[in-house]
Length: 266
Length: 326
Ligand SMILES: Nc1ncnc2c1ncn2[C@@H]1O[C@H](COP(=O)(O)OP(=O)(O)OP(=O)(O)O)[C@@H](O)[C@H]1O
Ligand SMILES: [Mg+2]
Image (cartoon, rainbow over all chains, first blue to last red; front, side, top):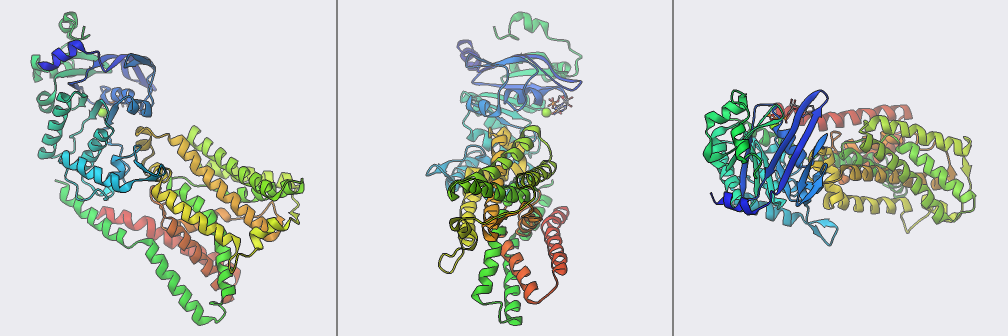
C-alpha cells in the first residue's frame, strides 16, 4: 500500500495519548492511545456506548478530557477548544450533525467562516455561490441553498454537514456515522468521497457500525471497547469476523499485533 | 422511505411561512388606520400622528434591543429597571456638574454594564436568562431608588431636555434616534456576523460553539446591546419629563417583549425581524392612540393589548408546530 510507505516517512498528524474522560460515574474513555496519519482512512468501530463519539469530541475540542494529552504538529495540548481544533485543521461531521435548523443551507455550510465584504457585511451571495459549487462537487442534491435546513431530508442534512466540514479546508476530517440516514446511492457517494479524501492526503477518521462500509473504504480499523483500545489492524490483514470478535470481546486484545509494533506504529 | 413525508412537511411549512407575520401586521395596521380616520377627523392630523410616532419611538428603541435578545434564544426582563437606573445616573451626573454629553455617556455606560452583567452570568454560569434578568431588574430598580432616596430628580439643561421635547423640522429627536437604530439594527441582524451568530445562538447554540465561535462573547454582546437600548430609553423618558424618576419604565419589559413577539420574532430563538418589531410597535402605538380617541377607558386598553399579544403568540408558535405534525 502506498499509504504505508508515506506513513513511514511521516509523523502522525495527531497523537492521542492516554486520554481519559468520565461523565459522572460513567467512564467513557479509559486511557486511549491512538495516532492518526495523513493520507490514511482510519475507521473506529465499537459497540454503542464504546466511547467513539466521546473520543472524536475530545479531538475536535468539543469536550475537554479529564487526563492525557493531544499532540498536533509536535505541540502538546491538555485540551483543545473548538476554534483551536478548526485552526489546526481538524474538521468534524458530528453524529448529531450540529446544524442550525432554522438557518439556510449556505449559512450552515459557512457557519463560523462567513466571508466578509468591506470587512463588515457577510457576503451572502458568495456563500450561496460557493455552497452550490461545493454541493455539486459532492453530488449532494439540494434544490436551493437558501432553503432552511429544517426542511431537508435526513440524508440531505448529512450532506450539508459533510459540505461544511470540507469547506473548513482542514487537514483532518472526522466523520461520526456520516451515512446513517442516507440511502444507498447517497451513502455510496459519501463513501467514495471519504476514500478520495484519504488518497488526497487528508487524515480521515470514520466511525461506522456498518462493517461492509468500513472494509470498503478504510486502510486501518481500530476497535474501541468499554473506553479502551481493543485492537488496531491494517484493513487488508483482518476480516469482518475478526473485527466482530474484538468489538464484542470474544477476541481479547490483539497482543500479537502490539508486539509486532503495528499497534504503536513504531 | 421518509423522503416523501418530509417533502410534504416541508411544503406545508413553506406555504405557512409565505404568509409572513409582517405582512399580516401591515394589513391589520392599515385597517386600523383607515377605520380610525373614518371614525375621528382628529386621527389623521399631523399633531396626532406625531404624537403616535413620538410614543412609538421609545418602544421601537427598546424593542429592537429585545429583538436581538429574544432571537438569540434569551429574554431580558431588566430593561424597565435599567431605563430608570440610567436616567437616574444621567441626572445625578448632571447635578454633580458633568456636561450633558458626559452625563449621557455615564447613563449609557450604566445600562451597558447591567447588560454585561446579565450576559456574563447567563453565558458563564449557564443560568436561565429569565431568572437572571429578573434578578437584575430588581437590582437596577433598587439601585435607582437608593441613589435618589426615592425622590425624583428634576430640572436639567436645555441641551438635555432637547432629546425628549426638541424639534428637528417637523420631527422629534426620539423619532430620528429610533429610525437610525432601526436601520442599523436591520443591517446588523441580517448582514453581519454579529447578527448571524445571534440567530445561530437561538437556533442551535452548541452547533455555533462547535463551529469555533465564542458563544459566550456573542451572548454577552447581545445583552450589552439590549442594556444600552434600555439606557437610551432612559435618556428619552428622563429628558421628555425633565425628571429622573426611579420608578420610570414600569412594565416596559412587558410592552417590549409583546412588540417583539407580535412582530414575528420567535420566542424559541433563531428567527428575528427588525421590520416586524418596528411595525408591531407602530401598531401598538396606533392602538393605544385609537383607544384614547374613541375614549375607551384605560383598563380596557390593558385587557385588549393582552388579548392581542396572546393571539399573536398563538399564531406565531402554535400553527407551525401543528403543520409539522401533519
Ligand atoms: N454528555 C454526556 N453525559 C453523560 N454521559 C455521556 C455523555 N456523552 C456520552 N456519555 C456516555 O459515555 C459513554 C460513551 O458514549 P459515546 O457517545 O462516546 O458512545 P459511542 O461509541 O459513540 O456510541 P454510539 O455507537 O451509540 O454512537 C456512553 O455510556 C454514554 O452514555
Ligand atoms: Mg456515537
